Length: 385
Image 1 (cartoon, rainbow, N blue to C red):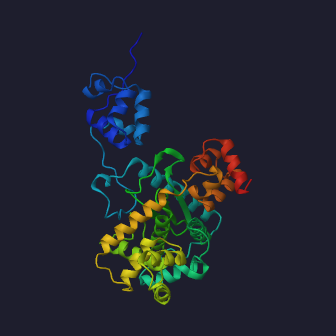
Image 2 (image 1 turned 90 degrees about the horizontal axis):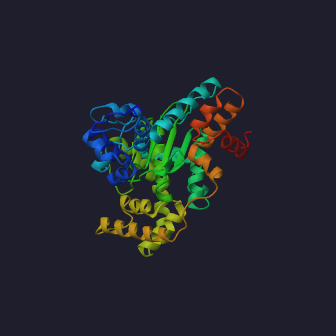
Image 3 (image 1 turned 180 degrees about the vertical axis):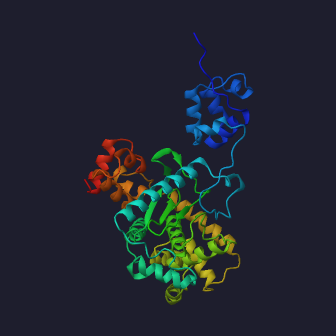
């Protein structure tokens, strides 16, 4: 019987595939009995095994045939100044969600132009503006004045996502790649990104972070759209970025959530409270995180802090302890999909596919659904069918 054809993969590439997968080397040894022989070059994987290796590492199959690992670059500007050196090269998960978002944006741009939809007016509307002016414009456009904020933090997040889509934008809020619970996004690698386009501006928020963090990320990415500059970010209220763009977007996001004039007026009501009670009361008013409020108190000199970093870290630990007592996520898969995919995009592509203009196979792939039956169920849940 003829020997099974083998694919030669260099030792350097095999070790790189292990790193890209995020798994331990022992996992590959257990799964592939001839792993050590592959490393020495005495043998190689079958075609099927090689394809599985590429899938596990989240890279194109052709990469396996290279002598050495390629340099992987993000297709959007990288503003992650605070990212760890080990995470500077984008992970396969990060690349997957960025490229999927670009494909969705490309599809929707064509759809918008084919259907005569107007350009989205907010794109670049804040270029050259002062942060407090742009933040005020954002609050007005997104119906997010302080007096309009209602409900839980989750209600606030949903409102911001939907309000941005009402203006013509696209949103994605998810913690995973392609609805795959085994491919969770790392919040220490990135919190969000924006893909700026005149007809299809898209903001992505990594929901593998707290709700308060997600709200700040949304505000920061909205600022990118108003500025007219795409980019990937690692937003953190404590972090003071060095770059001009991230400094501006952070300032806009902070002022958007906690308007200076309103804070100065209402601080007198809580000025005599202990700090923790102050933060909780003000966070409830502004429907944002206490860490954003804490930064605003310092920035506007409403309270003196002898050791701000220690106070910030103490508040962060308090929030982490509170988060332990809260129930986890989950819920109805189809109810969550409009946020994981974006409701504007979902309605457009479902209706276009059902009318026959977009092939169903393309629609299923772009919505990250697994089958025609799941696509039909989703269409019915959206009320498009």
